[in-house]
Every structure is written in structure tokens, then in C-alpha cells.
Length: 208
Image (cartoon, rainbow, N blue to C red; front, side, top):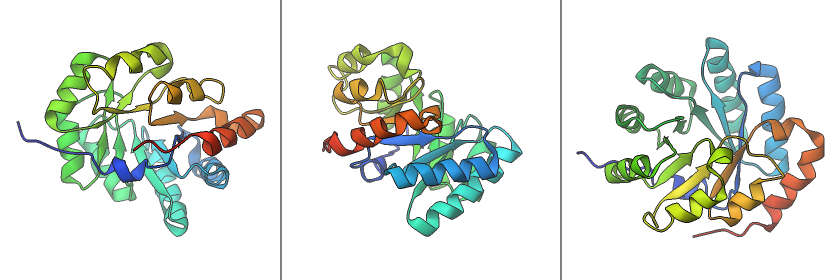
């Protein structure tokens, strides 16, 4: 099996405990919330691409982010065609809900580090055997914080991004459990959560 890598995330997520996800919001709202995230200090943004409108929004946010030195990735990448769309829109990386070695290879071939989803030890082991160290744990809120502590035993080199059901109320607990980055979405649409998210950005130490 050809060994691959997504070690680019070592730099991409370095010192970035939060990532923003904006799904199906269209160009204007996606741009508005992306700028809100960037102003708050959340540098990395993901836009899932499940429709032509999503791809248009991704391209718009990529362009806005490039002007400010921000990183924008494509999410819900579940087919080779999605990898092509992500690359054409200028995405910096791809994110998938599950682990698919063919999607991983296609993404690497396109020059986009892949972040595949995992939820079991079998999937973690398969991804790491392929050469990946950064993995998306999904759905994180259902897996719970204990899952990450348990996985750190057999897979100490695995670096997890927690996605699914994350907000200002539970993000801190997942980061304390060893998660490197927590992906939040609707929390950025709730003004009451913004101060708590900002506080997380200020107090979470960088993990090497």
C-alpha cells in the first residue's frame, strides 16, 4: 500500500484550536460568517460542498481568505468529483465524513491534504497505516471526550479534529481530552457564544 501523508496539517492547525464550518449558507452569508470567524481569531474555515451553490460559496470565501492570508478547505468530500471541485475552487485542503482510501489518494494527487473522518479504532488504524496522522473524529459529540483519551493509548501519534455537535459549551472539554482542533459551525451564528469562543482561543495552549 502506497504511503501517503497529511502532515501539512501540523502547520495548518498549529496554534489553532478552533476551525469554523459553514454548511449550505450561500455566498453572502458564508462570507459574512467567515469574516466573523477571522475577526474572532479563527483562521481556518471549512465549507462543505454538496451543491453547485456550495462550490460557488467556497470559491468566494477562498478568494476573500486569500486576500487576508486565511485558510479555507472543502468539506463533505465523498467522491473524486468533489476533490476536483475543491481544487478548482482553490481550497487548501479537503475534509470527509468517513475514511475512503481512494478519496485520500485523489486529494493528495490534487495537492490537497486530506482530513478523513473516523469513528472506530479500525478506521483510525487503517488511516494511519496509509500514512495519515491527522484525522477528523465524527460525530464527536456522540463519541464523547472519553473516546479520545482511549484512542491516545494505541494511537499516540494520531491527531484529532473533533467535528459534529461542537459549540462553546463543550469545545473546552474536548480540547482538554487531547483534541488538537474543534470544528464549530452554528455557534458562530449565536452572538451569545462568541465571547466563550474567544476565551477558548486565548487560553488554549499550543500542543506540539
